Amino acid sequence: MRNSLVLVISIFTLAAICQAKPPSDEGKYPKVILKDAVSVFMLTEAQNRSLDVIIEKYPDLRQDATMARVEFNQAFGSAIKAVDEFLAQNTTPGFNWLNGEKKRLLAVLEQLDVSGITRQQAKDYLVTVDKRTKGDIPQRIYDVLVAFHPGYQKHPQNEMAKRIHKGV
Image 1 (tube, rainbow, N blue to C red):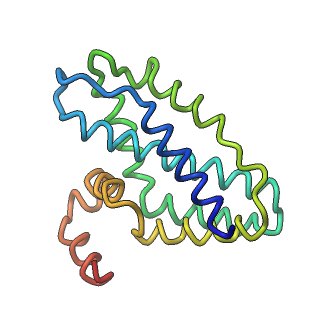
Image 2: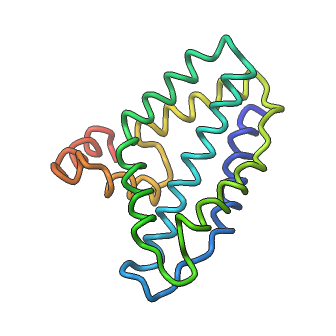
């Protein structure tokens, strides 16, 4: 039961990702790169919406949820913004981020109902967000975040040092 919310959010996010239309092969980048970039968008949007519910439902957890969001954004916010810009710039036949796909996926996320979250599930989810902030995140998502992170683009050795320090 403790991890049921995380599981529900994960399953919902994966289902939403699967609903994303695959870009055509006519683009500049392989479909897998665009699909992974969409996965980053979906995970972070689902996470933000879940944190919003926690803040609204449990005022005593507001500070912890706000800090979780701030710390995640400090770690990956610039990369997430770069991913969104990348998707906007790489429209291909059948995949138009700004004029359809992004809006469609946001509508799918609107269906995410975590209003039944218990206090314990909310606390567990905050731990999950903290782990994500520290890099404990699905590898393909992590790889995209690192690839688009301006700090790691300028100094890729910093990411390698972080992985060695983490024991990855």
